[in-house]
Image 1 (cartoon, one colour):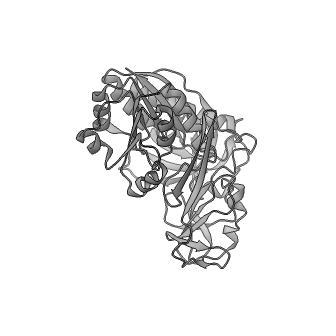
Image 2: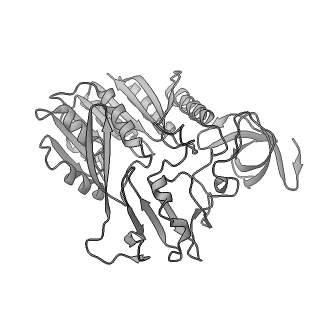
Image 3: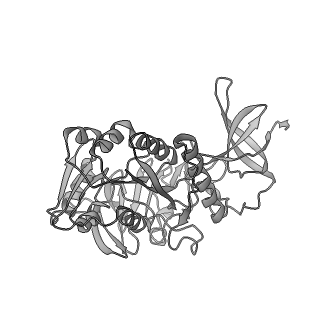
Length: 410
């Protein structure tokens, strides 16, 4: 290993949680982005310091390439570029193997579970080369009014010519050919297969036709989403600036997985925790039927408003607004099953303890962070629950992110 003025030479080791691989420089751990296991690269150190437990680096030249390396599908997200495409240099099958390795390692290390975890592609992704899947993108304008994104781990805006992960519907809007107010935040939302869409600038509706803010009091700020699985079809109207799964197929994939995991719920009682705008609430309400009950708990006021509109004709649904742990502590009654879809930080001890105290037969956990999932699986395990199954869903191609659905039973 030699140190050169233009960088350091590293032999790249295994993948790690967070979108990088592990290498060592004179015994020090270095997290390297834009590399692959087994490669020999020249890297630019981006974060160093004797007081740091690890350093960070970007691979800027590949000296010995992995067979899984491909030409980047999004060069602007390469070394020194924007965030959000850190695996664009990795072949799609190897991206899924990467995510599988991370899921398995986190479960093994934090939950002492040695199972293999499959990671499956969403419909259409292989045909599109892992591109054109985002129905929502967030951008920011630079000082010249050009739309772009922040440089990775920076507040510097890099203007973009395109965004290959954005859907064809978004690409057709010409977002990157326009001039925007300097430093404006630009949110673009176009549901899959839907005409038009919504553009928000600094949170307010924007009129693309006239190139200005839309002053009308009834300017469109919501979108309609359609979800179809083998067991049903549902329509949602959600606030454009609110949370919704960004992959065109993610809502249907996750609803299908959750319904399969909970099994027959006819006449049963279900808790839907971190219920958001009601993605799972509506299918669960239909699954329990008019003689069952769904209690949905969500802390975001905007999402709760969306959900209230959604379930107004489902009397079997009760919406509880507030912090999930506090609502559970106040009492929600018993449950045959619990579905929870917590934020990236996970559910945590208070929520796991409260759920376990209700003694549901089955817990279905939708996770967007492998480490948080593994920590919570360990907490459930200490309270008498067994991890029956876990499947990874590759709903974020070209990135290190992966969704997982885990099933725990008493």
